[in-house]
Length: 349
Image 1 (cartoon, rainbow, N blue to C red):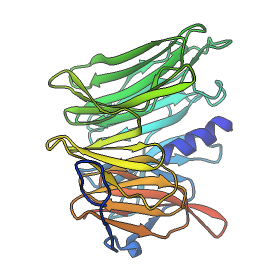
Image 2: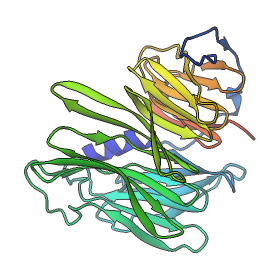
Image 3: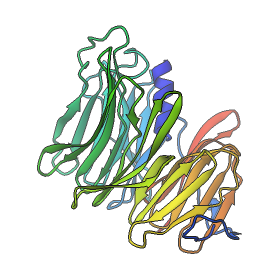
């Protein structure tokens, strides 16, 4: 049950311009009409968006907390189950879609707290074919002592899948960022960290030709890290920040969190970096699309920043998880009449 709760938390599961990162005045507006919010059933959580058919990918829990994946049709309001666990002894964790494929991770709920026996699958939505992309070195459950392999989180865009691993053989730890080309059926390791310290990469995100991730490690009780941008075409890594976390990407924009207080936005073309005022205490889990940026915050409401207009909308919905942007939708979970209600709204028609 502990693992299910962790997966549930992970699934809902991410102002003005200044090239020097200095805040300037930001207007607050009411651009998004909250009357257009869609409420879903209690155990149906948005985890992705199909940009072609305008459908929402849902993680759907049954009475035994077994997870299936389905598409919610915004026009008809009907839901179709499209993925069930390949191995029914395991459960679905991270899930993603680009409208052409669905990728997901399966791991045992009772295999430690990290899902050490994970496998990554991809389903072609046109042909229905399912294949294994990668798996843990402990996939058969042969794990003991201080050995572990943390269940990865996925990102998918344009037939390219990325994830990171964090593993230990009992003595040394290692973390790697992987890129898998679904058309060519080729896997590539982008970056690897090895050693006895807590070296690890955050969940990488991909958009077209770029991959972004955060890196951190504990070195003599001091945390060292940063945000990195990788160009697939140039096979080149650029460091964007010395202390950023929770990085994400969409189009030419990269966003991340610094010091649990700041949200930074970097434009790849202009090479300009700005700080977005958060109107929050602590912030984390930033996400974005071509127009908007949002983030988790301690105020239990929604902050939505418009990249073009440099305006922030504060939406006072009593949320308990989120918000997060997937393509054209923003989603969150709220409390209503002692129930948890997953909701989403279209950010563009």
